[in-house]
Length: 202
Image 1 (cartoon, rainbow, N blue to C red):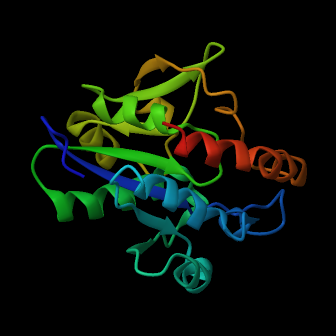
Image 2 (image 1 turned 180 degrees about the vertical axis):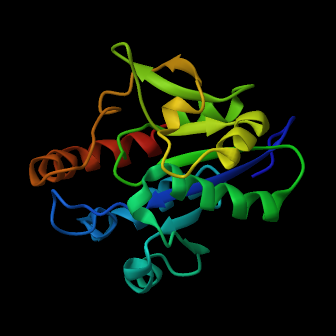
């Protein structure tokens, strides 16, 4: 995605977590007749973004079947944590885009964002994340400076120990929805229609 003025915008969906508490891959939960990762991808596509996906080796085939012609990157060491997956995505997007860029990082298990929040992040001048009720949330956008800081950091370092994004206050009712347990899945399925309908409102 090319910003009207400013850097190229890349996007990576993170889907390499173990889902140990849920007991099945979060990215493949069915919502509105499609997988969660396909649902998230479709929302991002509507804004002109063309995400790549970072996942674990054992999920590649199923995710490929689910999302079709989308570039998938494998994190061979997902046990090191989310930062390792972020680095894999950033490395690939840096190869693909080069030059001045910002990267939107979207964890598949944090789908409660609105389109207006994505637009705010994309138009921000520096690394930023949405905030509600005094808590930072997802997705996160990182600028060139922070992209390089992340790439230089150990893969097992917590992301919040590497960068300190600006916080943009938003009104997204479900910003902090975190799919971790079956109860979270049930809550998400309850509000997915609302999120989809909100996407299409003028």
